[in-house]
Image (cartoon, rainbow, N blue to C red; front, side):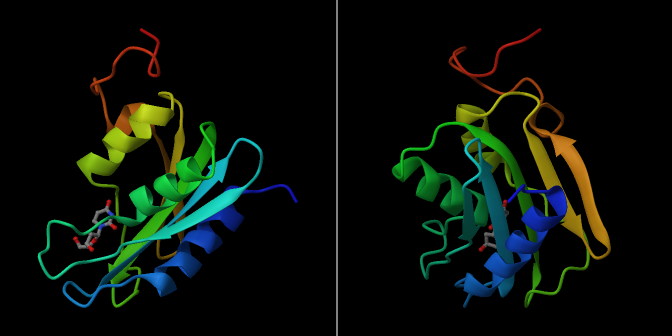
Length: 139
Ligand code: THU
């Protein structure tokens, strides 16, 4: 099955159902497409101490990396109060940095909104991001 941005968006929406959000009520979902076609879904998982909370994007990345994936093709991200998508839910800075560890500047990020999605690249969301130099190359 060829994965399209539209299908990836649907998988991100489905992932919101898995969110554990007793504190904020914001359900966030992510669907990460690996280079081999595998998709990993992630949700946010909150914590009573707040700071241990993990975002949906990192859940997806860490699931995938644990399983041995290192090459990624795209990610779709969505979120909203009680799972209602009312606008874009762009990745936080920490998640952008995690993406930069494994993905190049052209890595596509599909930001879901109520009637579709907007595509951005990692370079657009994390300009001049920190890197060891091994992963984000280019001028
Ligand atoms: N959240 C994510 O899952 N991804 C982001 O990139 C930003 C924030 C979650 C964390 C918390 O559970 C909720 O959204 C509200 O901040």
